Length: 165
Image 1 (cartoon, rainbow, N blue to C red):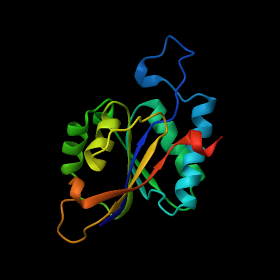
Image 2 (cartoon, one colour; image 1 turned 180 degrees about the vertical axis):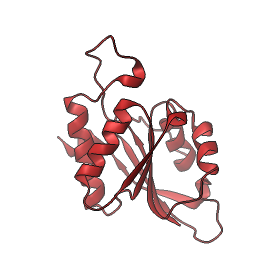
Image 3 (tube, rainbow, N blue to C red; image 1 turned 135 degrees about the vertical axis):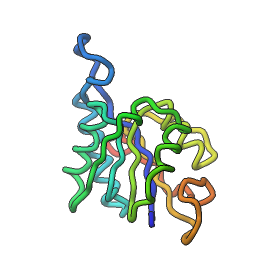
């Protein structure tokens, strides 16, 4: 059963190579630093992900790998092409077909879908910049629907600019 659900947007990507497709764009230097800072903060605050379900774009894969390298212990990343630019409804549908994992799960993807997921689970709109991470804590155990916003409350909103200033 999940204890924490984390919603993270990929870190800042590079636009320097105009020949790359959107899907192929890598992280830039600031993005790499942001991913590492967010990973360190999640670990220090006690809610580092055990498993990451991620879009398969280059920038989300790089974000996931930097998180994994920064956080001690074993984490696992699963890359799903259907998360690439998915809406909140599409992400919820994809997740609803999966067995609820144990521990702390991170969903890693793109705006506008991830900003909409934040709003769905928190009932609050927010600017959701690159590398932002909403941290939700489980409020009900047992047979509660793990994808219901009633099962969660937001306990943290991690922004890289707050960590690196």
